Length: 355
Image: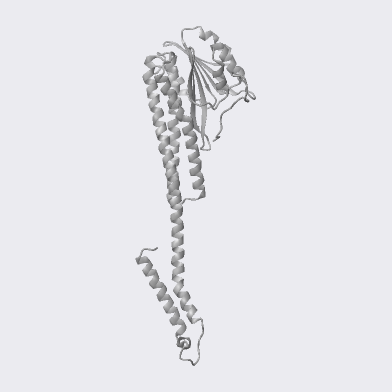
């Protein structure tokens, strides 16, 4: 996961400048226009094709998916009268989640978390413009997270086609926030796997995975924590674009953000405790190794003493000489004594539960 994800213009660039590098990559512009009785879905080649739908008494949703070029953003901005500073935030991704009001329009930036094929966390910026009778959304990824909302519009399920554009905004915010739960479920399974590894056979790779997990959870918290403030501001501050009947649904979104943040904090604490468990496990393994080595060394101390004494080879006619050196069974007797001493020490160690 990249630690610095924000794109920016060179310092000193005029505000509202729209500049992108390279060309558009796999961009897809989808238009959905609906009323309680009608529904149209089109794939557009150019933003100017939206013009006829702005004159209708309907809700128009324009969704742009992929890495969008400045010309496309500028064309949409001119057609819908979007503020240039907000358009600049669409181009320069990596923005902090926020909600800005520009007169009769509301601009919302959210982060959508995903898990890539390598099992690493990624966040994709979602930019939303809400105006009277229209909503424009930008999503740089290719996962099509809003497909469930599109399906609801097609099938006319629920209240979505009966409500105004602010309810559609709620639906997209709800999808964006709830995408955090599958990510947290992935982390829950990953943490459980690490805990089993810690108890069975922790190694240097385990420590590396714990550090990586701590960094990813920290980055995930930094990306998702501000979303709680965004939803809270939409609820508490008077927004002319948000109707009173939509407020209860936004409060439900707020509850989901609280649940996600609480889970992230729990997982961070679990990861920190896993680090303590790892250090304790490594220390215990070291203690076990040292205990075994100590038992072996202690066992050989009396044996070394015995062979050292009888290795002096003091023999002769002196009354102080070693008579055992001349015994017929002296050598096997020494071995018998050494075996008895070793066995006795092992029995003593086991009774004391030293190993």
